[in-house]
Image (cartoon, rainbow, N blue to C red; front, side, top):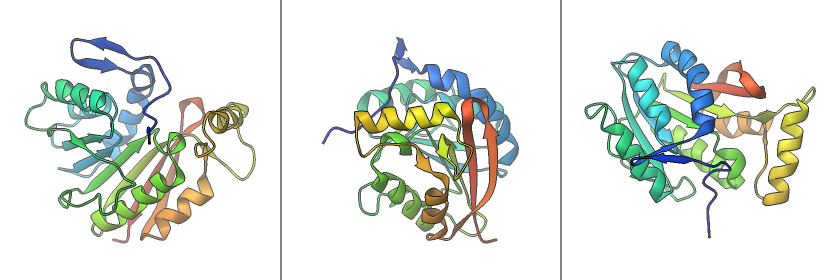
Length: 212
């Protein structure tokens, strides 16, 4: 099975891939995460893509340690190249597929999970696997941050509805996910939706937390 990686053209500078989407959203995401990540957070990023978010966040917060992961070999090489600027704080990238059973083994030190723009270009069982892993990994007070487009019960932006139709035309297993459905799969794993932060281009940053 061929898994989706991204829906954009990416430049290659040296060994570093440059995602236009990450270039655009890393600043607004970073502004919020810099304030919300706990002190000395051990961040596990799922589907870290090029590695630009890890690089950006470690530039903003000198106390955090970041573990990038991805399913794509080219993305892992790019993550390793970005990590060279923060050798003590961006760990070696790890190949990871959240649809695999017990994928969370080996990441028990993680205090925070972050995932951006994955669940709409992956089968629904990837979102379910992500939620299961978060439930296993995050101790009391642990945080999960999920970024991307979501469908609301009412008043959806036309751009998100069009994007949803376009994704489903590409692959019927894809699609912009219902915020209500996402909220429930995390609640089933003991993570409650604590905050919904509106972001540019009709995206949301969701903050889930385990019971403190």
